[in-house]
Length: 603
Image 1 (cartoon, rainbow, N blue to C red):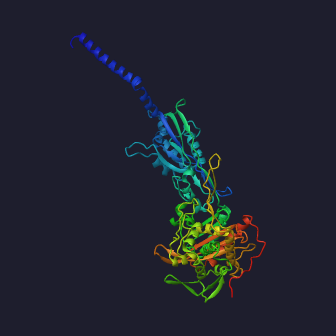
Image 2 (cartoon, rainbow, N blue to C red; image 1 turned 90 degrees about the horizontal axis):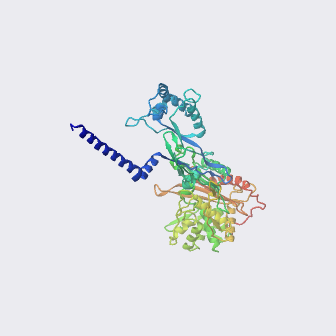
Image 3 (cartoon, helix red, strand yellow; image 1 turned 135 degrees about the horizontal axis):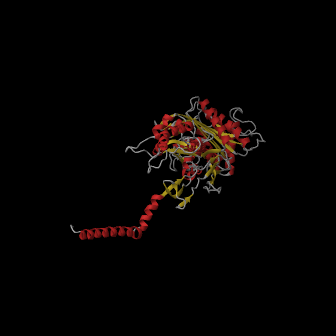
């Protein structure tokens, strides 16, 4: 190596090797692996943004909003940007940039406090937050569900910047879509509508049952970007979101409010622990009102008791008591075994299994027509008549009336209740004939009684009237089921017997002005699952009007009342209050003929 010629040759060989290696690498990058490296580069440059869909609205039957979505944002702070006020870290900061960076956290904190409330000092720890490794955080939430208009004001102050004239703005805040679900009527129909959680997912009511349909499908935006923003001629693909469907309910907001107020009054008068009230169009199965008490505010569900967040009218199974006699008489009348004038000799008590059954009122042997059995609510008379029908036939009628299966309203948590099978014991047939030994939900019972009084046709109860996609096109809904259960003649007999409950008892105090009404009370011993025993009472009343052509049904259930237990005393006034509002509201004309005076007993 001492010779210069050898050193030159060695240097040339090394240089040639370096050039060869560089050329080989260049060839690999540009020819062999060009596509792979291009894909990697494109991936690093590519940004993808999820575009959230707008959740669909829920309205009442007249278009009044029950649940809607308002634009709002989640405000995000980037402490790394805040602490440098957006300066490019690749270059040394000028004195001005350093001064602005030093002032930025306090300035941004004051802007947030001005628009979001609180004190600037409360925001500083977030705006300057470090990660565990000592580096500045890049993502911190400083505000959730902030109205879009307020974010525009914050942005304006950030843009105004250091001198207030926009020469040099403040950096470090951004916004993500975080819409607000609003319930303009607060607690109205809250047990039906439900609510969404902090993530915007429905967790109760129709908000839960229709989660996927209301939520829609998010979109996606894919674009090329550098640290300075989007690359104008790069990839730019937009898949727009598909907003959720909009739903109109069968509920009538005004009638719902009236029903809720009437139920609350009835609960207070009776001292009931809970209550339910339903209003139904008997000829369609549409639920015009569905009230629960106690209820809650859909805007603030966290303030409610957990047990009040559901919908007892569809989830709770109860023994219907004497309201069940309507269905028993409907079955017997349809089978040709009973008419309103059927004569029944009723003893003081009747043996059933290893026990005896008595009526709620003391009596010796009395003679009642079937009409009188219903008017006087005689358990003994109902048992005597029900024993004329084979047990499997009675069970079949109850199934046709919708008992023992979920009603299919579309509301979450429906109970199917429980009815005995065809091979039930004799004593069980006696029990179910007058409303014990079986369980139903309030919705099931309302739909069953509607079938008994509307001419004999069962209509599946419905809560959803219609649905539309975001572009206004109709969304197909399942067709509600309907079937004939009893004949028109049998249905007329049932209504006649129920009208005697209003006209034949109480000296006219049960009637409402202008309309002939028909009804039936229920007072049932309450089965308590906690002790597996009967504990307390459930009081109820179902009313329909007008009796000559039933249109509207109201069913009220008061659970565990403490100021008495008779459905005719506690629930009937609530039913009448709602009927008096509902009938004229739905243009049902007053009755033009008086209620007939028909015999309840015989010599």
